[in-house]
Length: 389
Ligand code: CTP
Image (cartoon, rainbow, N blue to C red; front, side, top):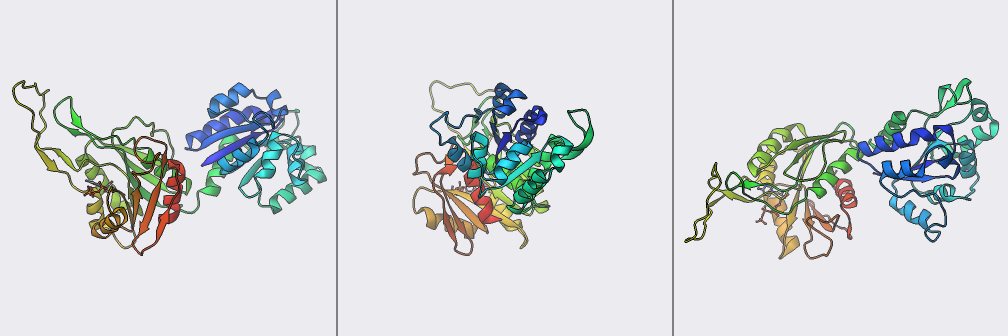
């Protein structure tokens, strides 16, 4: 998910970088927006470093429309800490700085607020009335908690702990596929020729990893079987990584995991063939003759899972076609007993291997067809999950 963390001017702002770190660790992309007062408590450099994006703080810094582009970018806006001031502004439709303007622009998307203030301010009828107004509009309120406050007294008003806020965001969004376990294959396979060479392909694993993240965002646990790739996939909660090298290793892992899964999405670029023999030493060149490699066919993981599939399980495959694209993809869907097939476009600029964008057509067993525009792989993954689960 793409989350904007808005920070306002309360002492609890010093906890905002920890919240950003937790959200990123859970696999979300995070950008920060802050009020000028927030920057009295936490620095721009800290927020830009933890989020790895420029901070949004000045309404007019890049032409005065950044609140709209940021609104288009974000899936959810989290304000932590939320002072009595920002709560009052939103409840009354006031937009007089970068964050309050962004909050008004976010009226059709999910907003979560974590209030933090002195206990007497929190119980003021104006604040309580404003909170009720925000709730009536569907804005979720997390906390505040009771405890020691910065002013030295004990009472209600402490911001909820960053972990509690992060969990609240994830639980709210992670409901659709709660309790489900999905298998995803991703990346290339390497087929060894000798001890130093292999046959491989350009797949980066980005599409498969985006699918795993979208499944986690929807509440599922993911078994990610991934071929050799430079992607850092190990640090995400709810994604269980199984690293493999060859098609046969991927086959072994996928067929073992599939029976425990509600469904599988096979996005890996599996080598159809492997060298018949793999030398255990480096092959020397032979100057006089060319080199011949005998290749034998690898097992078809997708077709095997199609044969194993129960009526309760969903199976989604990918297809890369150059001629008669949709007819061939439809044939593949039926032959391999799939529920959906995602047709990758090779004709469109910006789609396919290595790049961060893609364009697909999703065909279903019962004849439905969904065509996407050119989107980021993350958005394509969300579309695939929405359509197939
Ligand atoms: N696939 C697989 N195991 C293989 C080959 C492919 O699981 N040994 C899966 C891919 O992960 C993808 C789908 O099959 O989901 C489509 O692969 P593709 O190469 O387009 O099709 P093939 O079945 O190999 O058919 P062809 O090469 O004849 O088009």
